[in-house]
Amino acid sequence: MSRLTPIAFETTDLDLMETAEGRVAIIVAPDGKLNPAARRANRLTRGALARLLESERFSKAKSGQVISLAWPTGMAAEALDVLVLDRKVSAVDARKAGAALAKLKGDKALSIMAGSSGKAAELVLGVALRDYRFDVHKSSDEETQDTPGAVTLYHTRADEVSEAAAPLLAVAEGAHMTRDLVNEPANVLTTTEFADRLAEMRELGLKVEILEEDKLEELGMRTLLSVGQGSASPSKVVVMQWDGGKEGDAPLALVGKGVVFDTGGISLKPAGGMEDMTMDMGGAGVVAGTMRALALRKAKANVVGLVGLVENMPSGTATRPGDVITSMKGTTVEVINTDAEGRLVLCDVLWYAQERFNPAGVIDLATLTGAIIIGLGHDNAGVFSNDDDLCNAFLKSAAAEGEGAWRMPLGKSYDDLIKSRIADIKNTGGRPAGSITAAQFLARFIKDETPWIHLDIAGVASVKAETDFAPKGATGWGVAALNRLVLDKFEASE
Ligand code: BES
Ligand code: MN
Ligand code: ZN
Image (cartoon, rainbow, N blue to C red; front, side, top):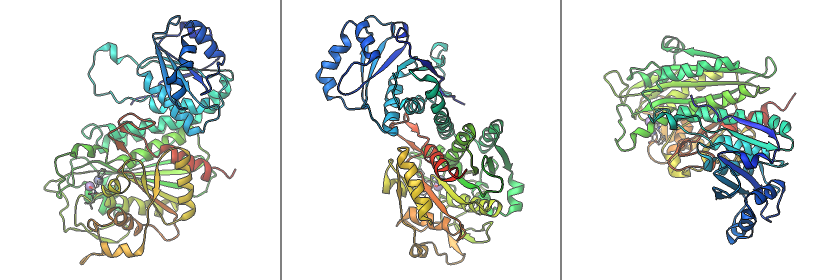
């Protein structure tokens, strides 16, 4: 698994600006006033920095942008990165600025002269989030396989920044885990490999249980099993418990769709773009990454993560359109389309989570519908909820973390679309309101008294263009927002 680039925190030492290799970054406010690091850089470069600061390019630069001086005279570094940044910036903007530095960094070492910046820890989080590569399957020569250059942040109060950054870096590490899982191809990340990677998190103090097919059969999780029955990979449910809160306090439950590959099953998907369905375990990936972040920063909350791991394949043993399956809850489901499999996985795990843990709230995450991409594109996840308090708290957390989230409606009237002629409910409602009927399906498996949010992350889990915080591919969307929700809403009462 890829690890975070090491980040060191050191007391400001301007002499290093001359000798540091790789890249050196300084921060300059839009007014162009020279701070100590800028003054030193200007002296070393014999006035090149001052010329840059007087240039039209600089006067047009917006806060958050970086202007690079390549191969600067008087410095060993191959670039001096001048980060233009307002003196007062929001946490998210500081992160974006850090991400901009990380994007330029590539595999080089990076020394950031942060002076006495009050947002240095957030800047570091931005660096850590953006400094990600998924190159485990690239066979390149020894030289380029070298570990990427380290990051050093120089600050007048290095210890303070280091302390403030620790819980933030836990979030970055969680997000990187999510990305690794989501980027991994399905021949590598089988259900078994996925479960093994989750079991490794026992070393962080998480309790991890793996429920195998015989146990799932015994529990009656027939709808989940019906999705995986055409695959050579065994279906599994993994339960991860973090007991950092008060003993006996009802936990928050996070539930993830973990379809390691979605061919559509007998309702086979078209070939074009099918390879993208390696990311159909994105919900489970976010649950895993969030549990990792919570464990790393030793969150003072009880949180349980449950993921349903299956592979949706067509075969002689696969579920057919028209089959009727009985869920763990007892509700019978007519499978109209075997490609609407995510809800079949989630409904059993959601029911199990409520029966076993009596949670204070349930949040499920799933790359559930193509329709949510039509509705919201790649900038916002769809948010569905039966509880305004929990929902508003989540929307606030997502906004604070710069992760797009937009509330969508639920409503009894949509239930008409998923009425079945021969069973209690059918698994698709046709094209109209496709994301909402999927959510309505899930709602049938949520107890009246359980506060619940369903996050449809099909549009945001993995994207074709880079985002503010991630290169192309898996984003890790949701880890930061969920971590913040736990921090603000489930840890507040001491
Ligand atoms: N995994 C897909 C949804 C998806 C689509 C995720 C695109 C990411 C990108 C899901 O299992 C699916 O196939 N949904 C169907 C439902 C339909 C058959 C009712 C869809 O959205 O077309
Ligand atoms: Mn599908
Ligand atoms: Zn799917």
